[in-house]
Amino acid sequence: MYANNLVTLLEKQNTDPRIKIVPFDICDVRVEENVRLKCMIPPCPNYGRNIFCPPNLPDLGFIRTALSAYKGGVLIVLTIPYTEKALEEIRSSKPQNELIKILGSFEKTACTHVNHLAFGLTVGGCKLCDKCPPAGEPCRRPLEAHPGITGFGIDITTLARKLGINIQWPVETEINFMAMLFA
Image 1 (cartoon, rainbow, N blue to C red):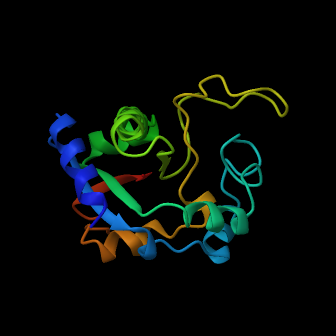
Image 2: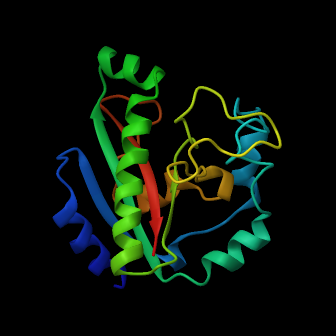
Image 3: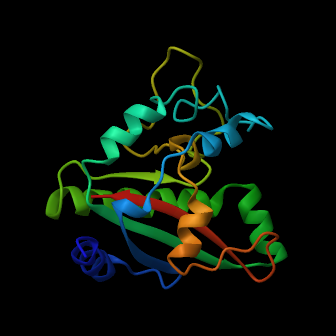
């Protein structure tokens, strides 16, 4: 599998025991309209407000075509035990922002050593700033921010379960925050 080289490289770089790096083939990634529909119904608070969320993202046809140029990538999974303290941290976006930083570091490694066109996506979209700048103004953190996986029409829950990641709805014992790195 193409992504195994990327896994080996990133596992050497990773120092966080909560992180799991799981390879995927591009044929396992499906871009679907009904997934993006979840951004709109019921409306996600970021819909139309976040620079890296719909309707500010490319149409799904463009995304399908663009992703077809990749062979695969990795799921980056940050696992946190389900506790009251974890819930407080989630409300302040702490784990999401930790994962965005890890993704950025892994993305740089992938661009340098695997594919200069490597890029990443995160679950729930970017949470680096309290609010995105107003429409028409640029992102304040363009080299750190990443679009949301759902906004790209990718059903991350189904993909993660297929790859053996424990996804619980409702959450019972652990919470898994995920990012995708295409290389």
